[in-house]
Image (cartoon, rainbow, N blue to C red; front, top):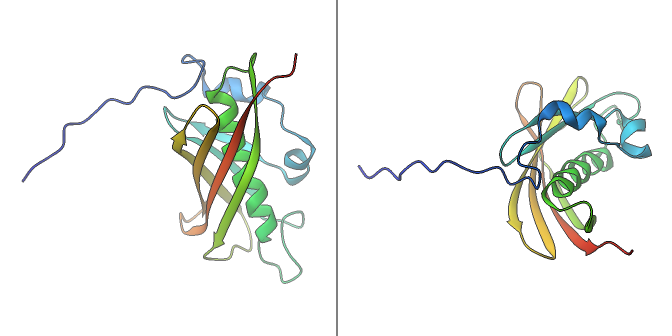
Length: 152
C-alpha cells in the first residue's frame, strides 16, 4: 500500500517564534470579552479558542445561540489571520462568514479550531470547526478575511 511521505509543516505564523503563552497579551475586543472567549492552543497551522455555553451565549430555548457560534468562529479565524500577516503593514477584517449548526450545546464549553484553506495576499479563508467538550461537532464555519494595507 502506498503511503505518502510525511511532510514537516512549517509554522504559518508571521512571527515563527510565537508561543501560545504570548497570546494572552493579544487584546480581544469588547464582544469577545463579554462572551468569555479564551485562547486554548496554538499549533503550526491552527488556532483554538473556547467559549462558555451560559446565559451570555444561549438563546431563549437554552441552547447555544447560532450567532454566538459565529462570533467564536469569526474571532478564531480573524485572530489566526492577524498572526499570519505583518502587523506593522496590514490589518485583517472579516469579509464573509457562513455557518452550519449541526448539533446543539446546552452547557460547558465549545472549542473552535481554525485552520487555513487559503492564505493569499489579499484574502485568507479559514475552516473553523466548533466541538463541545465531548468532541461532538457543533458547528462548521468558513470565514473569508480581507487583508488590507494599513493607512499611514
